Image (cartoon, rainbow, N blue to C red; front, side, top):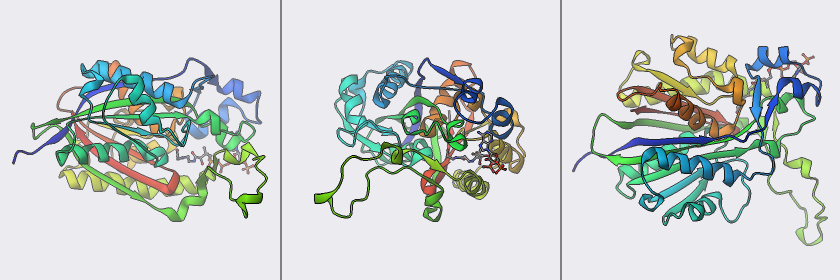
Length: 329
Ligand code: UT7
């Protein structure tokens, strides 16, 4: 039987127009541009005003399909990753499927900031086992809706945006997703969380005037940084090992854009020049699961992606989940 791989055939992205700069944040919380740039590398982020998560995802998806040169009726599956969904039902993927005019399986997947890595693994698995030929992965987030703009420890980090990719079955053995590794360390769950539904001692007698601020993202930054210090190298090592590759084979690392200091650690550990780690968090902040496909699309638009390149994507975040995959263009 012929080997089937999942080739990246299209990339697209969308960010809302409004730009929230560090100077603007100085008006909201006790912070300053110097602290934010020095501790995170972030200078500005895009914020969705009056736009839902699915709308961002839909626009990114349209662009990815256009870039792939295919129409939505060719899709066998749509996976949307988000930790800032509009609804519990309908799921984002079904809403976007309808807007695109696709007739296929649709699912949402939430592993927080590592969502794109997990969804790419799921897409690859469906393609490799022959259950799907073409899969659209959309990662869309409106983190501004779960951000506490009185908490300087988190509000300076987060932004909104969406990225999407199309994977298609190929019999070319040297192309596509070569390996994936996904994992989780639930012992760190408390360091990064957002409550979805309030716990009620007696739902029949509950006071349903729910304090919306309970939904806000809460993070203990330092333990999360400590987690990334072992989890990200573990994920990259495993993905490289499974692909039979060495760090020296990597053309690009496209990491989740959380903090420039974390990306520095990756560069040092793998003896890679910072020029091989794609960074755009200075202009977008941390957009959770959207950050990797958003970065990939920017690289595409800048003409930085070429056939034959080996790219490692790595994601990490709430859960605490983490993972990486190796893809050959
Ligand atoms: O996307 C999912 C994964 N997320 C991440 O990977 C994020 C991981 N965490 C981080 O990137 C960093 O921990 C932060 C950027 C969130 C914080 O950086 P840090 O170097 O760990 O700072 P810290 O939390 O240890 O705080 C140092 C000081 C504190 O003041 P004191 O107690 O030393 O007086 C904070 O209150 O910096 C203060 N601080 C700020 N000062 C000005 C915290 N946030 C701010 C702020 N502006 N925005």
